[in-house]
Length: 293
Image 1 (tube, one colour):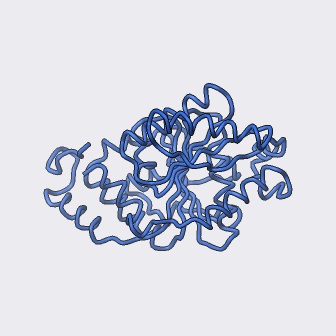
Image 2 (cartoon, one colour):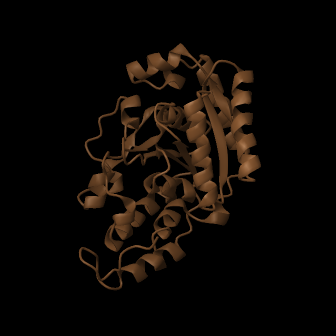
């Protein structure tokens, strides 16, 4: 989908689009980007994104968690943060990304999102230019960017996943969650996603149950989409997770010895072992903006 003509109402000067394309070509950020999404809400997507970010940061790299759930941004609640400004203020031009960035638990940088933010497809060239410039600064000072995306397969969700180096689709063993997880994988494949798609099984009662859940989705994707969904690991059902949500403290910090914390730590360790491949694909946010040019 192309953006509106730069000469249209509410857009920047006529050469704004040309300058934006030039910025995209010249930018060479290589921060690794990991998108976390799900087919439906209520499967623990944001909780996984928050705790994964903390575990990745504990291994040494500079990690930024960006809440890009444009429908229901709530990662801040899981960390007991009260952001005075959000991405909406950046788009409005009243604050910079540095202004809204917060220090999160475990030394991560947190970029708070905003529920009901503009549809990305409707941003003017001027807004895209401003958004790209702000996020290029973030990529240049970060090693890993974790994106807490929305749920479902709307354009606002798939745009971020399509531009990421790798995408985790979070599901639970419940039949409805599995159906929606497969729909998410299908949407990414049909839009020719070039990164790696991994399935993360949350709230599993055992390792065997998690494996069976993964094989069910991966088998269907392999048969009907001819696409190899990677095994992204699992999180065991753990009462410590529910307590952490209530207390607004990430469970890898509040209960580092619980089963769920061990599972996330194992996933972070595996991610650190894998080759990111970010340099070959270029910077993440230039790819996001490029999808609308």
